[in-house]
Image (cartoon, rainbow, N blue to C red; front, side):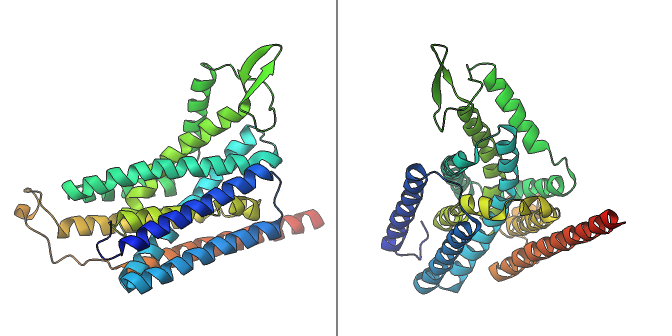
Length: 333
C-alpha cells in the first residue's frame, strides 16, 4: 500500500475499477458483435480519459510525484499492451476465430492477463521489500529483453505459443469446428473441446510471457503495488476496443518494437542506477551506496516514454506511406 494515499481512496479505486471491468464483460457476453471504428474509438477515448482523470485524483490526494509515476507506468504498460495486440492478431488469424466472437476472446485474454500480472506484482513487491539487489536482476533482464525486442526473432512469441498449443492439442480431444463461443461441444455423440479452448490457452500462455516483461518495467518507475496494479488495469482496459480500432494499422507500425525496446532499455538502465544507489552487495563499492550516479526522476522517464512512442509511431506511418506511394507508382507504370 502506498503510505501517502488514503486507504479509502485505494479501496474506492479498486471497487470502481472492478465494477467497470464487470460492466465491460457483461456488455460483451450479452451483445457479441463486431464493433465499428466509431464505437471502438469512443470506448478507447473513454478509457484514456478515465486514466487521465484518475491521475488527476492521484495529484489531488498524493501530489505530483505520484501522479507522474502513475502516468509513466500507465504509458509504459499501454505501449507493451499494444505490442501484445500483435500476438493476439497472430493467434486470432491462426485459429480462424470468427470476428463476432473475437471480443469475447479478447476479454477473457485481458482477465487472464490481469490475474497473472496481479500474481507477478505481489511477487515483485515482496522481492523488492526483502531483497534490494533484485533491482540489478530486473535491470539486466529488461536490457536483455530490449535487445531481443529490437534485434531478436520477432516470431519468438508465436513459436512459444505454437509449441504450447501443439503440446496441449496432443493431450485434449479438440473438435474440428467452432460451436459459437462454447468451450465444449458434441461431435458424433462424443463430447469434445472446441478450438475456442485452444485459443484461450494460447492467449493465456502469451499473457504469462508479457507479464514477465511488463512487471519489472513498471517497477522501474514506481515501487508502489497500488500504482503498479492500477496502471496495469488502466492499460488493459480498452485494449479490446483498441484491437478493433487499429485493425490493419497494427501491421503498418513496423518500427513500434524499436520504440518499445528503447523504453525497456531506458528503464533497465534506470533500475541499475537505482540498484547502485541502494546497493548492499559487498562486492560492489564495498557494500556501500554508489551515490555519485544520478537518479533518473519520474518526469524524465515520462518524457522519454512519450517521445519514444511518438517517434516510433510517426516513423512507422511515414514508412508505410512511402511504401504505398511506391506501390501506386509501380502499378501506374
